[in-house]
Length: 120
Image 1 (cartoon, one colour):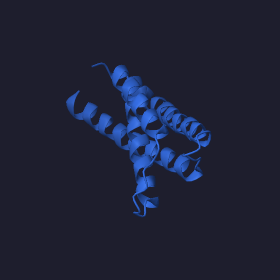
Image 2 (cartoon, helix red, strand yellow):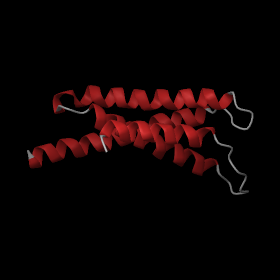
Image 3 (spheres, rainbow, N blue to C red):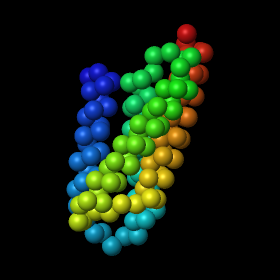
Image 4 (tube, rainbow, N blue to C red):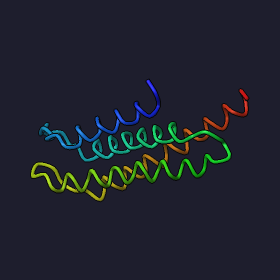
């Protein structure tokens, strides 16, 4: 499967799950929710970077575009959630979307650069 198809499939999956009703579990979910946002949008940014990355000289620009794209996608989903009665808009979710995207892109970029140095 191509990198682009993986990204598009992932974006549809994230959208579908983000717009579904959330069942009440009775468990304190505040920290878990933020962790899930961090990881989901970190993966999203990493997938954007996998599609964009061609040349290590442009890695910084590709990384910034990936972080921005993942964060914008998360913001747009938050807006969509604000229009659905059983979901809500959250600034905290937007923050953790951005932080996850930033963290994952930094780690993934570091791995890319090190692997290029060691393997060609």
